[in-house]
Length: 218
Ligand SMILES: NC(=O)c1ccc[n+]([C@@H]2O[C@H](COP(=O)([O-])OP(=O)(O)OC[C@H]3O[C@@H](n4cnc5c(N)ncnc54)[C@H](OP(=O)(O)O)[C@@H]3O)[C@@H](O)[C@H]2O)c1
Image (cartoon, rainbow, N blue to C red; front, side, top):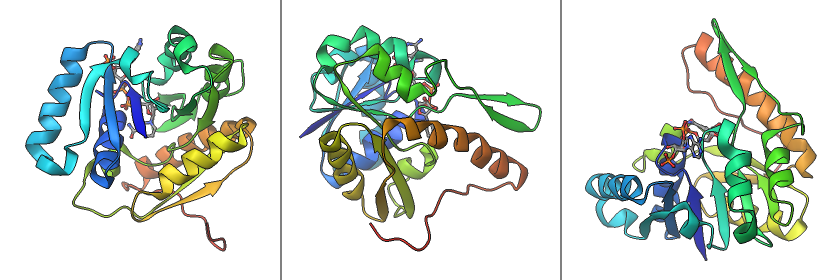
């Protein structure tokens, strides 16, 4: 199964791309500019060699043709990007990882679109896609450091049972990561909003904390 990532030239998408490739998945590193995607793949190959051999650079359009598509563009552009590729995304499993955030002095605050969350706005923009949301609370640097085994819990939400199960399986394929089913896409509101709390705590405590769910097993 090939995984396409829109905006994989940013820290989050490129980190996720490297981590998924290291597990053996075929990953299309997408960008609005294929040359920029090529540069990122070259950079990742230089750093990680054969561990990221399954990466391929392409325009977002090609990434949209994959079975699973992750939207890793800047959060303000997530819905518009989904709308631009809505036809190609129809029937596909789509993963929104966007957190709408603004920084006000020494705190982050959640910015929720009228639809309720960025993921819900993505679903409205690409109505025939099976939109899920995941990866909100994992810092890009954690994905990107392939020498460090991850130790993260990731909650996946989405309305389509099959798409949610597919993403849970994908997340679970990353060593050290536990995936949990967080219910329908409406619950993306909580995931996205909590990112503001987590980032603020990390800012104020000078840390890189993530989210762990205690007392349950995948
Ligand atoms: N950074 C993190 O630690 C982290 C953690 C969890 C979740 N997230 C979420 O993951 C997403 C990506 O984060 P990031 O820090 O990597 O973001 P970013 O660097 O700001 O942007 C990622 C990519 O988005 C594309 N982009 C920017 N503006 C665009 C526009 N107007 N239209 C279409 N594409 C556009 C660009 O790719 P091209 O120019 O190559 O097309 C850019 O490289 C965000 O939604 C963020 O909330 C980030």
